[in-house]
Image 1 (cartoon, rainbow, N blue to C red):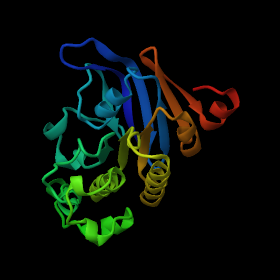
Image 2 (image 1 turned 180 degrees about the vertical axis):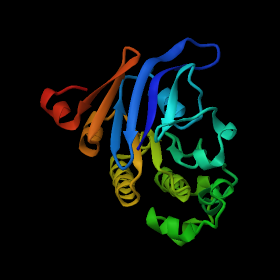
Image 3 (image 1 turned 90 degrees about the vertical axis):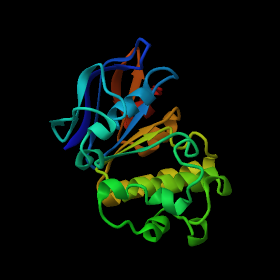
Length: 229
């Protein structure tokens, strides 16, 4: 079982292709890294895999089944299988909502009660923070709320698009350990996108590098021995 982008060509309205015939596979229960220079298409790949951007060519498959459409055009039973963590938690949340409401947002697609307090505890948020709004908490605390929101979906796959880029080193390490632990506990497949190749090497069994509009993969061990970035 895996989440796959197969020979994907993708771009945005009014632009040329950002990705050209690029493929990437995230196995269930595995952690895969994606690196590459700015403009190489890492975030575009993330949006394609998260069903937020339709490829111009190629396809996305979940466990071997081709997914047609994006966003709300995709049935909720399919959408809930993939969750995404964005680079900026502030851009990914409604500033008018409390952390409690943010964590509980997936209720409309999971169609079951969400125990917010339990999820908050899992991600290291104390009960007193749940009534606060984004401007009343730190970036790290808000990103933890976003992780809890993602976990509320009980996804099979989690796409992390530079999810720690705006955090300090200590908070980054804590957040990444949290994602790693949750992935192991739930058997989620995780895509970690980052400019920090050392971080990816330390966490991921395989790191793919986007460049020249294609991906090539190197194992963590090969990365470390060759010094490739």
